[in-house]
Image 1 (cartoon, each protein chain N blue to C red):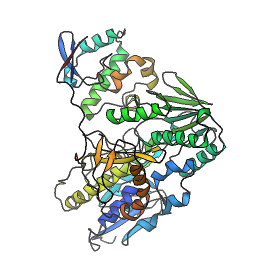
Image 2 (image 1 turned 90 degrees about the vertical axis):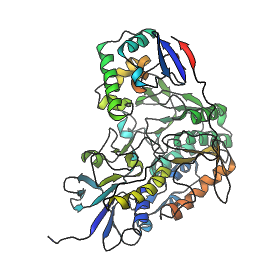
Image 3 (image 1 turned 135 degrees about the horizontal axis):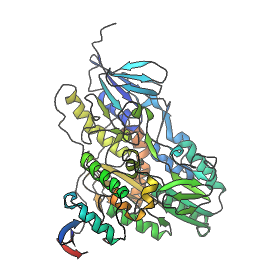
Image 4 (image 1 turned 120 degrees about the vertical axis):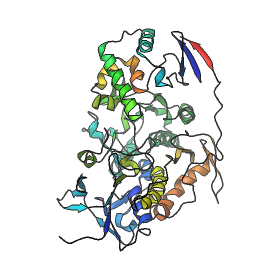
Amino acid sequence: MQTRYMRRLLVLGAGTAGTTVVNKLRPLLPREEWEITVVEPAAFHLYQPGLLFVPFGRYEPDQLLKPTSQFLPAGVTLITESVERIDRENNLVELAGGATLDYDQLVIATGTHARPDMTPGMAGPQLGHTVHEFYTLPGALALRKALEAWEGGRLVVHLTELPIKCPVAPLEFAFLADDHFRRLGIRDRVELTFATPLSGAFTKPIASERLGDMLDQRGIIVEPDFYVERVDEGALVSYDERVIPFDLLVTVPLNMGAEFVARSGLADELNHVKVDPYTFLADGCQNVFALGDAAALPISKAGSVAHFAVEVFVENFLEHIDGRPMKREFDGHANCFVESGAGKALLIDFNYDTEPLPGTYPLSVIGPLKLLKETRLNHLGKLAFRPIYWHMLLPGRRLPVPTEMSMAGKEMPTPQPEREDVTL
Amino acid sequence: MTVALIQGRDIHVDAEGFLTDPGEWDEGLAEKLATNIGIALTESHWSAIRFARSDFEATGETPTLRRMATAGGVPTKDIFARARWRCAVCREHPFPGGR
């Protein structure tokens, strides 16, 4: 066996996190010391935030797909294959084709994926006909076709279980559907229901109240605490035996990480990698990390989280490979635009400790954006993000937004009374 | 911060009525809260409660329903059969009527 003086960073997955991390690290790791290899089965990189707009005919597939290899820098080897399992004891990754790759440092960035097959009845013959999802490109295109032919009836927008990637997407879909039917002049022929396992519109109280009001204003019926057991023909059935009939169901199926994560002994119940939420080091490992949606973090699964996380990770990684402690701690920063229909959107900005608050979000050049408030500028921000994603975020260029969440511009909620006695 | 007086003790709860300090919970409190919603706790209730509490202690997070089923061996359907107390399982300890 030939002695290998080079060290290898192996990155599994070339989505947002995997692509960004190699673009940031390649210039920082000397080529004579480090080789970087990426394993990704998909030949095309999908701009996932665009999927929301596909059912309404606003984006075409060619606007959302670009070759995976186009975003990987020189000096990075791409292997187009899927992973079978990680052999942590021997620092090896086995590929589906039987080949093995050794690593000195491993980054798992294989994301999370919609799994309609995990809910009885969801992946049956109804899927693509009366049951739809928009988390995959074929799913979003099938839904577009169904909406084009639809003349009204009961449309149920449904969320199976958290966590899902982009937790605001089902809400956005409900808002856009409402807007879509209004434009067509058939809103009065559509009964629009939003069924969620949460007790309100969103996971955090202040945003949940604001978004809940927006659903009310649009005449969208909310069915809270709805934990689906199965999908019957034309009806959702919950564990507590509530039945929601539908003519068209748009569901967000259970999201799960890659199967190999479980086969490698690194997974939680949903195949997400158990990690330290501040450094992303996988539990029980010294040279295995997980970034982006693949990691089980107590914060939303979203591209913005992947982006901020990678910035923290890169600095820590350089310390770690030189045997020094990782000093930076990820704060769980997330932000996202929430499309609300009629050419407007909201912006939310939050982290592990601070829920989304109203106020303003400082931004150079185009000026401050309003938080938790529907504006035209937020909508333009959402649309502008697509070219920013392709040309700045994926190539690892620095974006003009701080990595750590800032309280600047945010309005603090009214403090609760010190003490309010209730006798039971 | 709301303070509820239950069995002569101050219990701290959040805006939604959930206990904020796991240390203020004991089995007597659980029985009192269950009685308030017309439930006598059985061994199957207790096994779910004990798993939820020990898992919270170990992980720092309240187990999801999926985790209750896969790691705790409490079938989801069983939890919903006793739907009125499901919050006791999924969000730490309930204070009924707190909302």
